[in-house]
Each structure stands twice: as structure tokens, then as C-alpha cells.
Length: 181
Image 1 (spheres, rainbow, N blue to C red):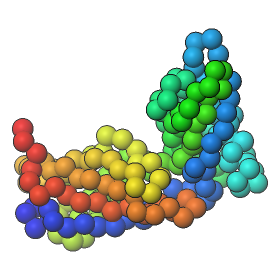
Image 2 (cartoon, helix red, strand yellow; image 1 turned 45 degrees about the horizontal axis):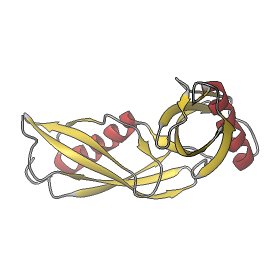
Image 3 (cartoon, rainbow, N blue to C red; image 1 turned 180 degrees about the horizontal axis):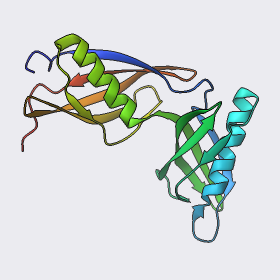
Image 4 (tube, rainbow, N blue to C red; image 1 turned 90 degrees about the vertical axis):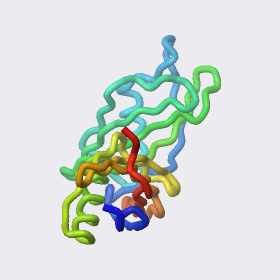
């Protein structure tokens, strides 16, 4: 895979038909310094409704959101029969007010699949690609994936280049050298 390492490729994924990126709002926190997962889901639903004119079919969050700057939570949204990821990140806490941004995400499995497919087209063989985290749909957002081909594993840096509505375009670069055991 030596010829692969210096290449950068672009991918485009339509994350959703409605944009929720960059929204910020406040909710009250409870005595445990968390925002209840149902409250987070309701706020996501309201923001989608504001942007698209209709509420999604469902929004579910796995846990409560900690009322700590930088805390984040990945939720799932279903709209028009399609599933979308939504990341919520706390931006500030002022007493009982918790402000957080929401942004759509590209599923980690979809990112890995698109990288693998592009490399298969370029090189004629299919590497195994895994990504540990979803990719936030924010320009400049990054995630690190791992590519295994012919017994060697390389790191892959994935970077969001542009976001237009729900269309997230990103590029990736495979490390020049394999990862050390």
C-alpha cells in the first residue's frame, strides 16, 4: 500500500435533508448537573422543526447530558424513514442554564465504507477500514480511522471540507508510515 499513503481523496455524504448544524440554545439542568436525555431529544426536535418546518419522527439519546463545558452526547434522529446522527456539545453553563450546540454527524461505518470504496476503485483491492467515532458535520472537524491492508495498519485522518445543508464533504489522508505494533 506504499503508493496509497501520500494520496488524499474526497468524499461526499448526504447526512440529512435538513440542517441542524450550529444551533445553540439553553435548557435548565436538574439537581444532578445533567440535562435529561428526554429534554435533549425534545430540544433537537424543536430545532429541526424550526429549520425544516416539521418535527422528525423520533429523536433518542442514550444518556443524560452532563452540564459540563465540552461534554458531548451522540443522539439518533429518524426523519422521513432515514436515520441520522446528531452530536450535542455543551458550550457554556451559567447556573441552571446549559447552552449546547447540535450538529449532524456522519456515521463512523459510513465514513469507513466510503474510504474503503474509494481506495478499492483506485488500487483494485479492498482494505479494511474502521473508524472509532462518528464524524461531526462541522467544517474542519476531524476523526482518525485505521486502514489495514496486506498485514499493515495505517492511520487515516478524515477532515470535513464543507457542509451545505445536510451534504457533508470530507477528505482523508493515509499516514505515510504504518502504525507501530
